[in-house]
Length: 212
Image (cartoon, rainbow, N blue to C red; front, side, top):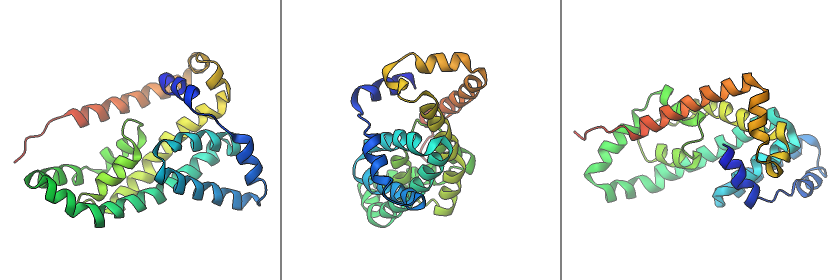
């Protein structure tokens, strides 16, 4: 996470004042709707723009409300990408992979709710890849959506709280995050637990199952 914020501090220029001025033209409720719509539209076409919206959301709406808004936007994105993959990409992938598709379909679609929750709760696998992968298999959307609403808030609350607490110092001071962990033992413990979940995802992905 330290590396992530260091990288973002070099390449992301946050124009929070401009966006705040734009949203201030509208009633508060409508500004929330506009934020969600912008998130859905922009991140659909520009993959790495999600980081921008995470930072902007934390600065404008605070950690908890911004996490809720992002979760709602991610649910909309998941619906769009899931059904695009299901109705427009599944036949193509099945034709390209031929015999291997059945094995991959079975392996992914049979993931239980626990593992789907872990995948959604950790930052190891990008949401877009998960949305598309689920749509390309026989997984039920209701099952995937349940995992989304259970796992996504955990990840987003963790990220949004860090961004909101550290503010702009997360860009100017690379040691700010490390110092925050040292001073807040409870948050450090939670982050260790979170790290364990990430390790579980890595082990699950790297585990090899023999094709029938």
